[in-house]
Amino acid sequence: MPQAPSPRPCYAIKTEVADPRATRFEFAAQKTMYGGRQIAPGDTVFVFASENAGGAGLVAMGIVTAAEALPLLPDLERQTPRVSIEVRRTALAKAPLGRRELKPHADWNDGRPETELNFKFYRQATDKIVGISDAAADYLRAFFR
Image (cartoon, rainbow, N blue to C red; front, side, top):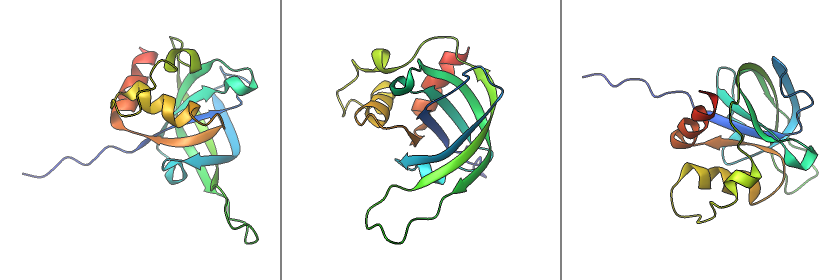
């Protein structure tokens, strides 16, 4: 019996968002961690407006329409890969989810999607694109119903 194709990976980005209600977003030269550099057109991305820049956490879900990896600088020994992406918004968040809601989930080994998101976004406060598990993607989709 043939296997169903695996779904496309999902990602989340935490960064400054000038207009959380925009229908399109452009995010230039974003740091990547936890597989975030693999983001590609057609992937689903959850957009978090960074609290570091006055945002309120999860604001939108969208589809990546363009992604371009920036070349690494040859004169730097250690550097975080960066990617520029464009996103077409498909939905606005209907419930709050940010640092305040995720902070209590700090048992790094409990396997919960809330803990995964807290770890990837708030353990290090830097803005970034991250790859997320199917469980975390399903958890985030609930904020758009």
